[in-house]
Length: 110
Image (tube, rainbow, N blue to C red; front, top):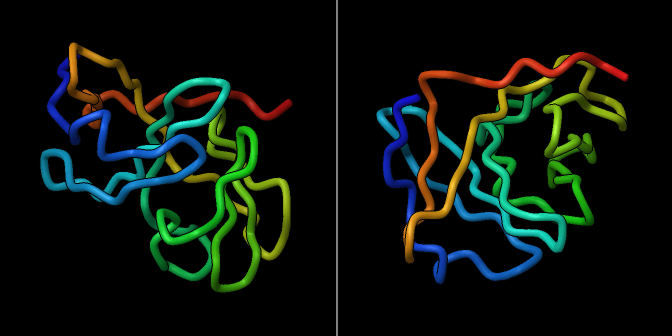
């Protein structure tokens, strides 16, 4: 795996998302009660930043049309989006959040 620094952990408050670029890839870094997540920062429906949306439990909702994505799989569970978005391996190293955009996680739909 090829992890790169995305941001400082202190820059992402619990229950929020932060937009960042990792190796040229737009990523939303998300902190929840269930842990840390990294998801593509572009809604598959409207091509707007997911990081501007609301975080609830293990989901992020696109502010534009209300599509909601599971942070664990990238799959939408609320229309109008029907296509998943990439999610990425994430780890915390000291004070830094590291993301591996070279190896997206492809979860199977449940």
